[in-house]
Image 1 (cartoon, rainbow, N blue to C red):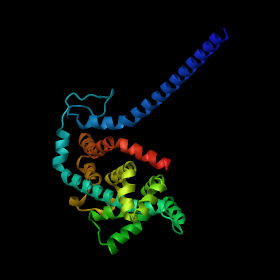
Image 2: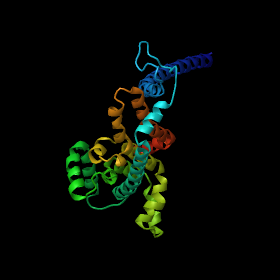
Image 3: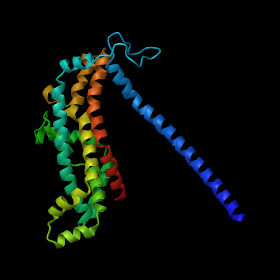
Image 4: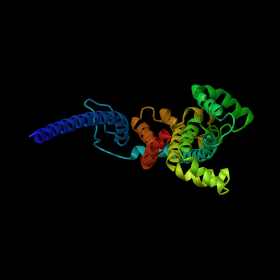
Length: 292
């Protein structure tokens, strides 16, 4: 009798916990769906506007979500009016070169900060972190003076690459990833006669590939979306990246919201696809960095 009563109480308790967990999951799903709708709705509206025909209302009451005459003529018009292909090539070149150089330099900087013992290591690391206090906009004036008067790379694509060669945030992420690798593995490689560069290249980098992918995503996305610094440095149209070049839409298509929407989609869609393809590595990299 006691056993049956205990089983009944346990069953009721299990049912109560299951119901509570189901309610909590439902509430969280509702919140996440609402956040997703709020996040996606602006881009979805721009996408719909970009394929609306000339007889479809851009703004109306009630709102017209489905175009009556969908067309890609807006994309063709923007492509023909501006050298979009050149803008794409410039953005891809800057993004790829800046990402590759940033991965190389920041990983080289993070390795000794994580796995090599030398005087002042922690002080150097904390000084690097302290630079987060300084807004990036405050560095634009001295950087502009250096670009024009010292390095002489004004109005060239290298003016966008050099400032992105190393970033403190990426050094921090890679340092945390290196820090999570067992020291015994590195000590065994040193006993076998491996140099520090070989340990960094052949042992540590393959282990932290998810974090490297995360750093690559951060760097490439920031380079692709950067507008303020490129707008200061680039003036010839053949050297402009996509965000800077498409500013011309504000003048050429000031009253053509369909053309402006098509230009915005051209800018956002490639980087959105890039993130979707690498989202697993992005999540794994961030998890590894936090655990480190």
